[in-house]
Image 1 (cartoon, helix red, strand yellow):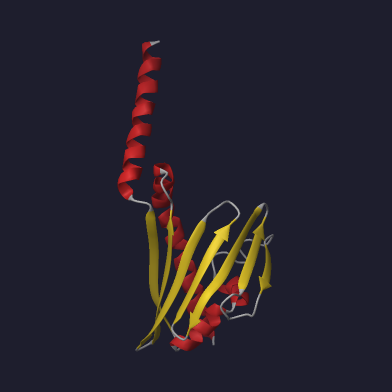
Image 2 (image 1 turned 45 degrees about the vertical axis):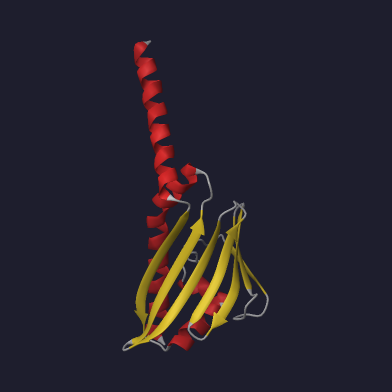
Length: 174
């Protein structure tokens, strides 16, 4: 009986400490990756602004998720264009907010409630373009959501790196 109390108190203590750690973290999160692409900035941003290309280079592609369905709305490559990705019960929408010669801004929302902001910044470099991809979001007030975002950031970073490598491979072939 005494061991049961110790286990319950230990678990309650862990729960309280995790909540306190989550409150201390803050609600905003951001993941950023950079790399060099062998093409001029305008060409890179033009490629990224066409959601049809994302199936080839992103971590959320048809090869990795062959049962996924992609559809598109709006004028490809222009602000307002959307990509809709369906995989089982999950639907995710990417929406282009702004497209400039050296910058692309989008948001992404899933039907599970997750919303994030995405930003590509392309700067001229000696070897072509220095491309920086930033993804950010806000977990709100829930301290456990903050912890989950912190734990999930490494997975997001690896997905962004895989996407960046896909972009680099595309321009290495062209």
